[in-house]
Image (tube, rainbow, N blue to C red; front, side, top):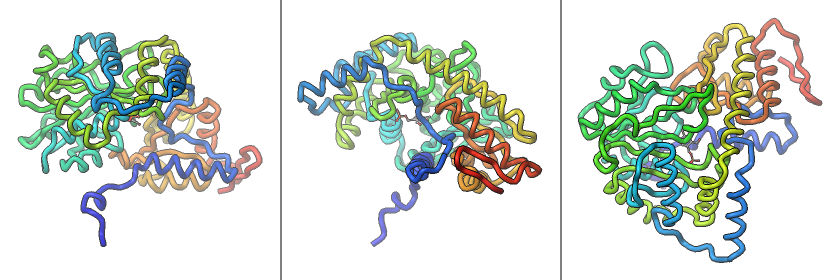
Length: 402
Ligand SMILES: Cc1ncc(COP(=O)(O)O)c(C=O)c1O
């Protein structure tokens, strides 16, 4: 018997599939260089670990309220005041099992069958399938000039009477692009006037380089949070290197947050109470680890972009944030899936094909691993792409040949 139409329409997450493949190759002893990852290598803040251990030792690990514990919601309120300059109340916030679930629940609360969800290209891999899971129609918007940010006119041209949500991520996975303030302001105002929700995925908002900061959506609206159409999605995964804890959150108008909490209550219940305890400690504790992570990433970014610049034909814009670089490999292969497979097969370097983010001919290279990984990965890529290079490349005990 076939599975549902929905199951047939949804594929496995490509990045998670690549992670599994890299782990299998590593377990078999292969010197894999993983430039496909999506999580910092640093450790979770000690305060988070201690808080988790202390709670675990009580043996009282119970269900949490569907929207998160009161303490978790208060930590999100404090975070919102600190980073967004807005005073919100408990009914405006809810915690989820990662930003991913918060995004999904928001889409489920907003999107009816055939409603459209508009987002710029390149986009995070999950947005199209999350939209489909909610019954909606993904509408990716491409910049005619091939850049990483469509113009405001291009975004507006994609909005129709069926548009329910505009979904943004800045700094952006995969491009590292920070959307500019006037553009964001124009878009938020256009959407709010038409009752269209702007979902802002801010999961990388503290990982911006060169002393800059990303403009956030609450800077782009004068409305009170309850009257606004802005929804902020965020979490502890990237900034605190707490991906496995699975804690994210949403901030928005209270009627929407209530609807989202209702859905979440039946879907999964409240997020893991132990993880919430750890997340609160991370948010309320010393913030030094975030700055250290940002500095380490900035050094790796500089190294990666400099090394890629030494490969003739390859184009790589300097990412302004995140830990990804979206590089243009079209001079070597127009088919990013084929090229990524070749890199994995020939030189055991994991990358993610650009087609998964809506841009063919590009590869996403992560620099969240060690700087040695960055250097070794680019050394191998440079060798493989250089048709006049040596017939063999030595990597530790391994010899790669063309
Ligand atoms: C743009 C973007 N949004 C959301 C997420 C998911 O974050 P979380 O781990 O909090 O679910 C990711 C993770 O890779 C991401 O890149």
